[in-house]
Image (cartoon, rainbow, N blue to C red):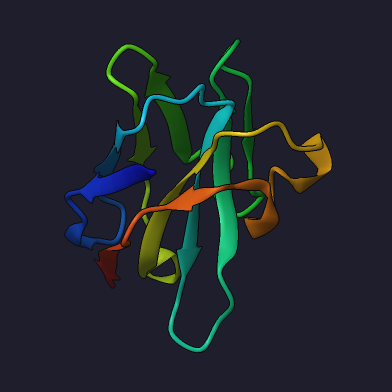
Length: 127
């Protein structure tokens, strides 16, 4: 079993920045990739960003490209999401996820591309 723990969401004003982190612990497994998703009230969970653990290849949703940066520390089994130029529409519960078994790249931007999920952390952007 793998546990994912997100640290630090919070409240920030529009235009501000926030960094989320997510640490993996538990059974030692090879992580193929990690990602961030978010879910706003009344909406479905949506993809935000993902990174491959092997070479650090990243992919972003169009809505966050050039504003958010995903990075990882394999030694610490931690993934980060640096969020800049935040907008009120970024308000959501943010979830980190880990892919511990190989999956087709076409699934990396969907929930089916991941095996474990964190509990979620609230991010609120005020206007």
